[in-house]
Image (cartoon, rainbow, N blue to C red; front, side, top):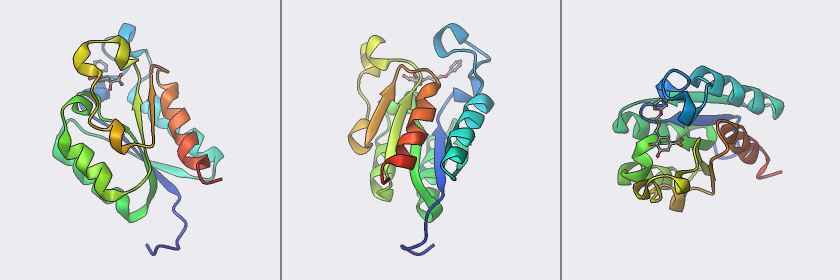
Amino acid sequence: MTDTTVRKTILVLNGPNLNLLGVREPEKYGSATLADVEHLCEAAAARHGLSIRSVQSNHEGSLVDAIHDARQDALGIVINAGAYTHTSVALRDAVAAVALPAVEVHITNVHQREEFRHLSYLSGVCEAVIAGAGVLGYRFAVDYLAERDA
Ligand code: CA2
């Protein structure tokens, strides 16, 4: 893809344990499944004439690979890195390296939770951070990436 080609894909990246959304701990993370989140993002992207590529992995290196792959065709990244948010310099470096606009999403308000969740290695390399809006946060993130250049 050349620099002048219009990019029409948003990478929606979900980290460890988010495959369990809607299946375990609904009182904390809600009843929507990961498939529901993907559909919600697809619908939001479609309203802007865009598509999404959805990747979930429990493995840090696979998440780094998906971020690198986004360089090929994505206009931006929506990332809920799960617990890696609070530990991973590798994910931070990957987001910084690809130089695509990224939005960090958390389903819960991490600032109302344990102290160790207050630190994010990603916030400093993301354009926007959305926390505590439940799975709606993913939709807000897709809308932001679609409209930021408008
Ligand atoms: O609030 C968020 O979206 C989090 O990124 C979720 C992570 C947590 O480590 C972050 O501090 C905040 C945990 C994801 C685990 O997802 C599950 C979903 C359903 C059942 C069990 C875990």
